[in-house]
Image (cartoon, rainbow, N blue to C red; front, side):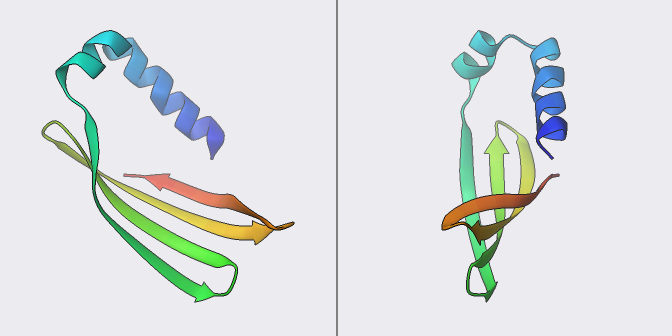
Length: 76
């Protein structure tokens, strides 16, 4: 999960510089939905816009040792 996110960030970095990306446009979270199938578990879906592009983000959070831990992450 982290390795895939890290790979995508590196690929994005190869296409444009961080300075140019931040100067042109900012990412915005357009909507967030949270489903709680049982106590201690949250499944989250978000719509993120970056310029003309839209992305879906889905993640599952679980309470482990009294802390929220991301156990699944998908970027679309």
